[in-house]
Structures are given as structure tokens and as C-alpha cells.
Image (cartoon, rainbow, N blue to C red; front, side, top):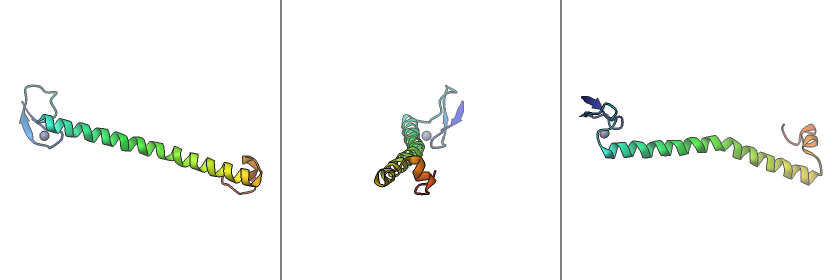
Length: 81
Ligand SMILES: [Zn+2]
């Protein structure tokens, strides 16, 4: 059967309908791309958490400097809730 490579789009002949790539090189390229996409995705997922940790660190520093609790810092408008 004739099928299209999922990576380079070239049509190629294969006996196995499950074959998605025309060559081992294309299969590997697609795989390494998937890995880098996954890493990027994970990085994006992690970003808000890092920012939040940074924010909490700043808040606790403000509280320590002013000798107040988190609740007081929010109440007085020193930090945003
Ligand atoms: Zn290919």
C-alpha cells in the first residue's frame, strides 16, 4: 500500500499499515521533536508555579521586614491577595 510519511509528507510504499514514516531518519526526527515539544509543554506548565513561589517568597519577605502576618499584609494593601 501507498502511504504518506507523517514527518516529511513523502509518499512511500509499505506492507504495514501502521508504518507512519518513510524512513528511520524521519521516525527519529519526529520522535525527538515530540520530546522537545513535551519538554516545552512541561516548562510552560511549571512556569506559573515558579512565579507563584517567587511571589510567596516576596510576600514572606515583606511580612518579615514589616513584622506582620500574610493576612495583615493583604489587609493593608502591601500585597495583593
Ligand atoms: Zn519521511
